[in-house]
Image (cartoon, rainbow, N blue to C red):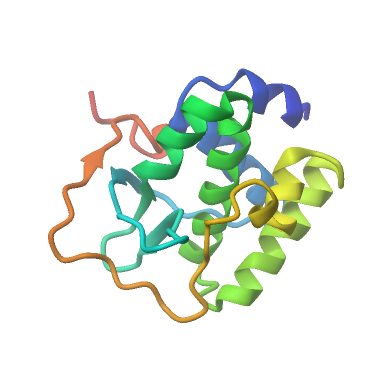
Length: 165
């Protein structure tokens, strides 16, 4: 597996998500079928925002649009690594790891194991504040805004939705 090259060449959320699933399945032979991905402006508060969250009742990952746009415009080279990081973190939640600290530890471990200690993915998992000092993962649960407008990403979990044209 040359995951570094795959991640660098990935052109969509779906392609990055396939790498996430490959890493997790290779490590623990578990997967979660039929996930959806939504992009939404989750807002931000003074000096903080949330990168993404997993909706257990809806089997959906929602990524905050603001950091994606900021990264795209200010540090495009970080984009795929950031998307991989948030998708891996939320995918681990989808597998039943609800404890935030445990999820962060697993995210860091898998990033290091499959990409190496010096890779950007691992550095993001180790200390995302180094790249984005205003990003905060809530220690308590995250409550989504009530009036979210979610843009769904078509073809996200392609391996599990090939019957949909």
